[in-house]
Image 1 (cartoon, rainbow, N blue to C red):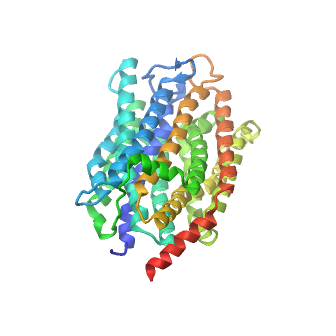
Image 2: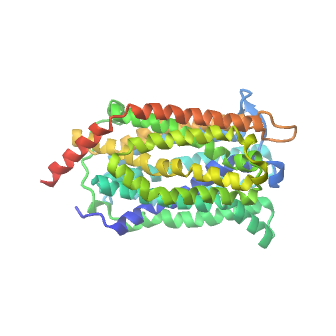
Length: 460
């Protein structure tokens, strides 16, 4: 097998830039776009208020179902990928086939063509669910390929650092959406809704190109000699969940990911409604947190190589928990210096952003390689899908709850209430706090010991 070059690693990680864009579109702006505040100038396109069981909004229900569809499709796609016998490999063919549908479905979510709320409800449901299915068909094989191509622990951390870097830079461009929208409205004289849509169109074009680069340039079989699993998907999943290390890491990522989902879904509301920062200045806050996290990337990289991933993960979750609870005290923030205070808050969350962007995937890769060393069988896809299934169910819970919470305490004619926003911060912080407890029980020393021993044996 060929040694993976730095150029190949870069090409492989480029799709994370696109994923950062699309994730920001959905996590940060979907609810804001379809449950608009009066100040945004956006029209009301879908049915508002509680529509299901008296607790769920249309957008919350649709997105939650989308995550459930996504979660259940993960193990199916993983099984297909793990056992794929295509001449191009087990992973790359999926990436070729589903790059364009993945990107286009993200755009069409925001392009509902009618003024009829019922029609728009259906339109959004179709394309959100399509997005999650195509996301799975591309990303499950993509994520499974990296620990197959790179088995060296240090190089794998480096690769996940690059991957996270591209994701964060893509997210940074996504966070610039309000500023780009303002430019579109001012320079191109577009209406608010068209300014948002044209901005997302630009993101989609960029995304398609980046998703295709590794699919068209990497020859999988040059780097991977896989032993395909012969057991059924059900037995593979049972095996994955019988691994205690996998269960602990997955549960930890479930709770910290759910806490992060609460934060991401409400970030625009926190900035504009709670902190009182104008929409067009939100880019300053978001850019500050991203730049701060990027500066910390080399520190986190070296820290994890020297001490492992467990301690940085625990520290990152603790800091993020504190940040969520600080949001509840927004009224005591200095009111004469709102922007400066918000910038300081953004710097504070830079550490957990850096840690939680780099290390979860690297930590899971350790567990996957531990299992491969123990069994001699490559089941990266199944492990990735099993983890993804659990964590996405948590994300579904967050997306289901958030729209229902944010309307609590809303004034007549508004879709967002301060009381509800504060509740989202409390609940998100509690989820992350549970992750701290779970990570304490993860035996990283045993996992890395087996992985390193296997690596030495293979080098003989």
